[in-house]
Amino acid sequence: MPSPPDRLERMLATQRDLQKRVMRYPLDTLTTEQRVAYVKDMVLALSNELQAEVLGEVSWKPWTTGPAYVNASAYKGELVDCWHFFMNLMLAVDMTADELYEGYLAKRSRNEQRQREGYDGVSGKCPGCRRSYDDGGLCRPSNVSTGGAPAWCGEAVNFVGPGSQIG
Image (cartoon, rainbow, N blue to C red; front, side, top):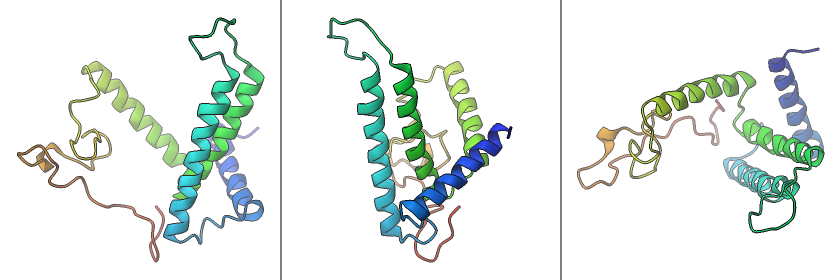
């Protein structure tokens, strides 16, 4: 049986094939406008899966009087649907399994540090884009003008467009 990273790489490869062959989304040749539309469609589809379909399999409404329930089998099926859309979002920027794993570890470490330091979710954020200063290095407190508005919110890096490389 393949290791978990190999499984993830295999899932991404088969999802890329599905998008290209069956769904007719040639991710490697999309224009910037097509890529933006694709990302928007995948975000909307993922949001719908989470908000409507996953929630539909649990008794999440606190105002109801019926018994609490979790339809575990259907719930898991909806999570698989969500995973398809999430992988499509990864594929839109050619994100690898290793990049996902390394990003997860870095974010997990940052979240643990935030909790140790009393993170409040408000301070330490750029007033312009609301990114945390410790989240990816795009914004810095020194980039904020004296009036509180951002003088510059980071810089454009790793954009995908005509004639550019992904990643």
